[in-house]
Length: 106
Image 1 (cartoon, helix red, strand yellow):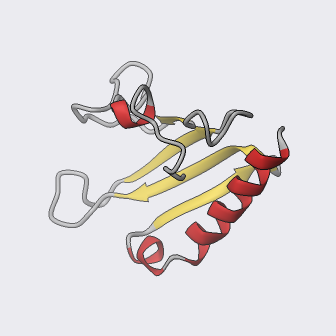
Image 2: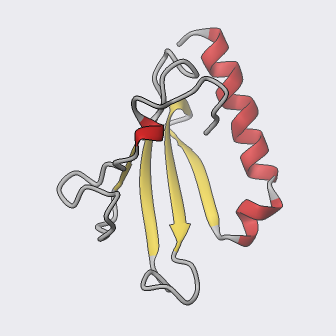
């Protein structure tokens, strides 16, 4: 993987791990097989929503061309949401596709 991509992912991963907001929202992220290109996330369903009490697991694949191209993110846990494919679990947002900007981060 390109050094620029790995450096950026490492920096952003550390920022996420130290973020108080992330901890308070019960969001977790971990490396898969010690790879900086494959991550697993877990999001707790927010209180007072239909998702309350749920634990939602995500697969995150970061391309070698990151940050110039966005990561591919999909829900492993089945979830109904208008912006998530009920078939693949892929997140259907332009910000993760055509409208991705280099200044965006994980």
